[in-house]
Each structure stands twice: as C-alpha cells, then as structure tokens.
Image (cartoon, rainbow, N blue to C red; front, top):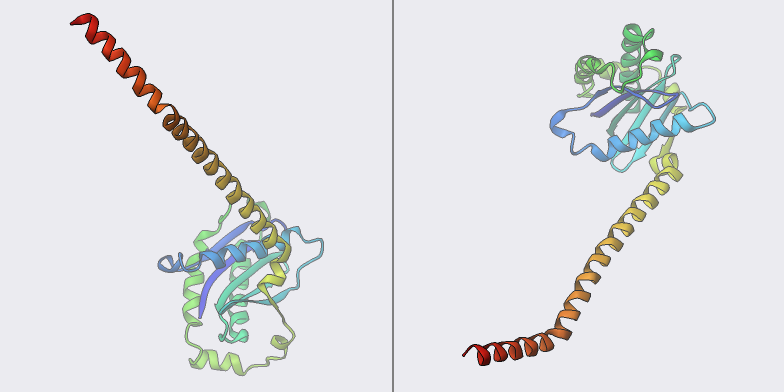
Length: 218
C-alpha cells in the first residue's frame, strides 16, 4: 500500500507536490523527514543520482524515479508491496506531472507550488491500493526484468553522514540546554545555602532589634 508520496526538484531538493492522508500525517512524520533527507542528499551530491532506486527503512521501503526533467518522484510503501507496482505508480505520476507543469518547474521558488497535483496523486493511489485487482495483476505479470535491475539500499547507507551530523547537532543542543538548566539550579542552591548559613544571625539581629524597640518604647 502507498503511504506517502513526494515530488521534488533534484537540483535543490525543493518540494513541488505531496500526497499524504491528513489523518495519518503524524504516523508518517519521521518517514517524511527521511524523504526530505534523500532529496537533500541528491541536491548536494556531486554526481547524478541513479534514475531509479529502492531504499529500505524499517517496515517500509522508499521507491523513487528521476525523470528527464530532473524531477524526483518518491513514494513510501510497505516492504511487502510489489516493487513493480510502486514504479508503475510513479511512472503514471511522472507522466501527468510532466504534461501539466514541465514548462513551469524550473521557474518556481516556493515549496509545494503544485500542491493541487495532490488530487491526481490521491486518485491514482486508489488504483494501486489492492494488488489483487485484475489491472494490477496484469501489470505484475508484465516484463519485470527492469525491476530486478533497480538498486536497493538501506536508509542508513543513503543518509549516512548527514544523519550522523544531525544527531550530533541534536545532542549538542540537548547538552547546551542541560548546561543552562544546571546553571540555574546551581544558582538556586547557592542562594538557599547562603540563606541557611545566615538565618541564625538574621534571627538573632531581629530579636535584638525587637528587644531594643520594646525596651525604649515601653
């Protein structure tokens, strides 16, 4: 089953369109972050990305294809979902997206400029929900030689250094926050210690002053 679909420009990783069920967005947040990491890797790489690739991530697999217009079409499916159908789905998206927006892709500067394409994504996704339909069985029985040649990698291998750097940054921020909290607590403890140290003296001075006042007034 198709769980997430993203379309982005390869040269800078700019997201162009997205297809995601709103009620499941919280479940897919971490995978959406990984998808953006894949786009970022493509944009910063000195070499062209493979035109097709499958990337395993836990119980799911990312599948992507890059078309001649330098646009990446990426989807996330369950690991057991047929690779052949996943790429057929992406090919349908690529064909329609290119037909509608090919002459506009290079000029856009804001993310999700073609968010209206979600309507076509949702409609097409429904056709690929059930792998047992006659339509999908026919696609699975077609020549699958091209699918066997598609590289499959692990998400850690693909994101690799980028993820490690992100984790280091996160840890650094956490340590900095902990250090600030420790400094605040240490200051509070110092003030409490001073108060306990001089409390008897304060009480003694207060008693003496009270005694003097009472004696002279009364």
